[in-house]
Length: 211
Image (tube, rainbow, N blue to C red; front, side, top):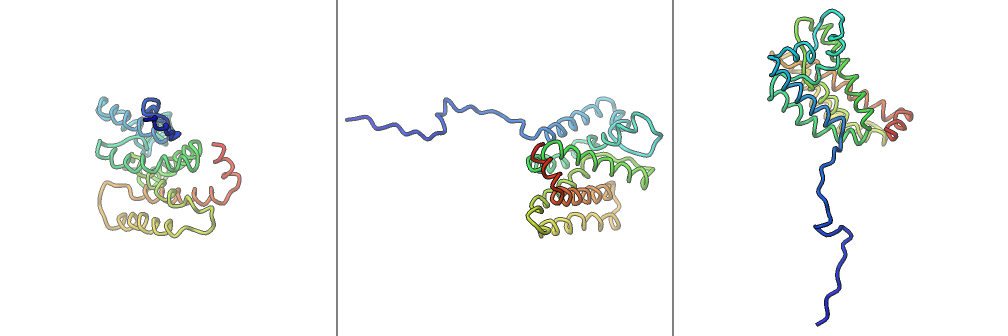
């Protein structure tokens, strides 16, 4: 009996295929890893680094003051706070990084962090702000705006804004908790602004493709 002809699938045999883990979203993954390291450092230093480097509050201008403008997004109060933020951050970040580019996403994170810091120091001088929740809300709104360049405002974006930002505005006036609802609102506004800018400005769209 003759041998059957071999069949080639073009995908390689199991022995030739290699399983590997890709660092697919450098900004997103690095941010999450550094945030985890910052949380661990906070435990080691009994909260000193968290308070002095990774929380933002009104204080005199100094080197630490500049670090806190951005660093507060890396700080978290505990593991529960960290996991609640990083779950959505790691889900949305790679999508946005592929869409807008790593450099542009990093710039959006930085701008959102500074905006939240300035508002916190102006309007809430007696409290500290820390955590990536404002960045997460920026990502939520920005993700809903990814198809805006096709023309018009996506209905899904409008619904997301109404649901997420609407609930935050409601909670800001009706709920007494330790959550900075203003930071969430500001993050959402930043996400909407970024979505409009990157959809409408040809130069920004060109920079995205080269990022």
